[in-house]
Image 1: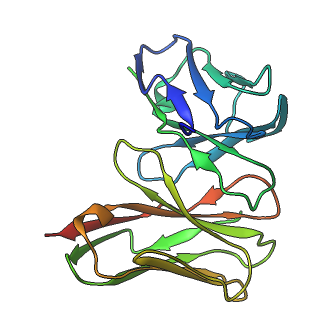
Image 2 (image 1 turned 45 degrees about the horizontal axis):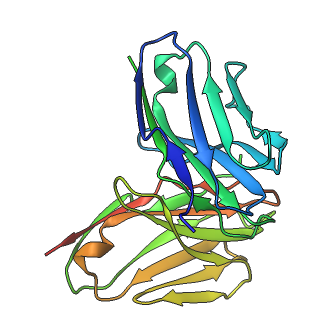
Image 3 (image 1 turned 120 degrees about the vertical axis):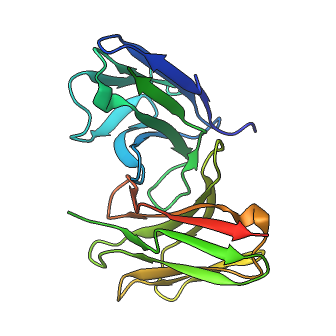
Length: 114
Length: 111
């Protein structure tokens, strides 16, 4: 068990470009979550999947954001037409099942939009 | 708006001393309380999940308590060591899947 992995660890992009991040959860975890952390704040929920179904999306997730988990394993988070306000740490977590289960986090992808 | 608050925001503790910090949350719709330790450039590490009023959990020198009626949890570290330096986050589920996090307590252990 290698834990939750995320790729890339760092991404620097210019405003207006599209970026895509990948998350590989712990195998057999059917829940997968995306969070975003900005400076001085705690992580904020973006969206989550149960297997391949996206069950909840935060109002923080504007139309420029899309997340997928096509085969119920890895997930991608895409941001189109990036803005400077998108600069943040994007964290992925996975869990076995219901809300009281521990969510195991990856190391995050730090996005900087210039 | 369901807010989770942590205090203090930052803390410097001499090596060998014990310390504690607080997480407060609305007691309505409470589901579970999670504590994480997050060291720079690493993944947040899960410490505890607590659900019942009066729960106490322990992991080595770290322990936590939960009071769901008054809406707070304490995290205690006994005999602080340099490797305890990290940001400690608490988070709560409020009747759903997502975690609502506090802003964290940044702990620095002074050798």
